[in-house]
Length: 154
Length: 154
Length: 154
Image (cartoon, rainbow over all chains, first blue to last red; front, side, top):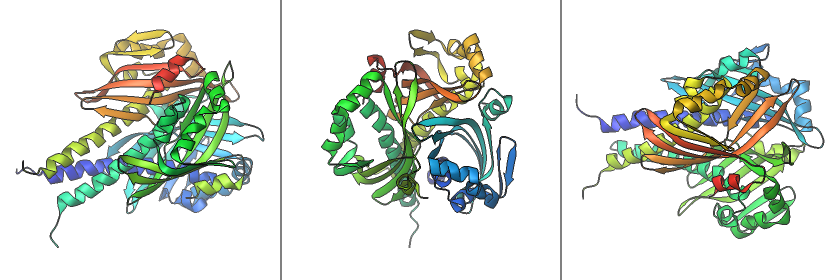
């Protein structure tokens, strides 16, 4: 075999770009839901992707996006809310990847902010034509239940 | 045209470095303000850059840095405070960039910590001689007002 | 000297990979402790590394990992807890690096979550055979004491 230094660098560079692209996807979720922009939320998911939180599973990017149109979500926005996701631990595997992180929902109550949700998140992602897309996201409250810890497993 | 694999790799690498440099700039803000280091805060801004929060706009890096010398800020430091910025969604555009993220101010009240501010942030940055610098930062409380949501637009 | 564009790119790429590897290490801490996985915590530290928090110093990766087996930590897990670390400011120096960031411990009290700790962190890391490892981590509560601000110095 002849050495291929440019090819090797290209492969490593692509891995770095992939990791940063997944950071960007995850950093885009909060602004999309906190502005109530259904299309921007849907645009993060694969067309057939799913989002499971608590005992609910939404399937299909459009259904995930429509979450922000619910009366409950709209009232959070009107009162002031922030869905903040932490730096993820990403594991790349070719054209797929997993990411594990935390999310918090801060809500304003007219005077101050309270921490309405603290959750574990496990993301399964795939390389799509334009960047990366969510195949599935599981979100579970860190309230002592085993389900949330299962999502965080090292 | 002849292929230029090294040139292509170099351009992609520079984009990756730019994104990490902006992460570093944003991760440097909290430590600078929570230690009350006016020079370090000013050093993140372009000489003519500005910082707008609530109804206040500070213009010029030195004026931004001097924010930490105010009695109010000094009392936060003395009591215990943390200005924590979330993973930003960065959009590079040559020698300029925008970043969108959240910030929270946690303050100690002698017994525990409370969430004193939860804000949306929109950063406009430019490549400077040594790294990147803030041209403008807008910060607005996520208390239900439209102004904050405007900063988060996807 | 002859130009060495591939060698130059390789060095820059390695710096980028190093920074992302340290992000990954730091993003792995929370999931390791919140699942009570002593081996995963220990695996982040150098065999002789240390972790100092408040007035306690644990020395040796296994002793750091065993922290999660304490009755106190186990009760936090059973009630629901999240150790969330912020985006670090990383400074690479060859085969060593420092990172500065914030950590928060959110705990569930049966109804909601409260912010039980807000701390400054200073990490000293070294390149190991497989990735990076923690030589020392210092963690100090941001309750107004000077010790925490010393860890955040710009």
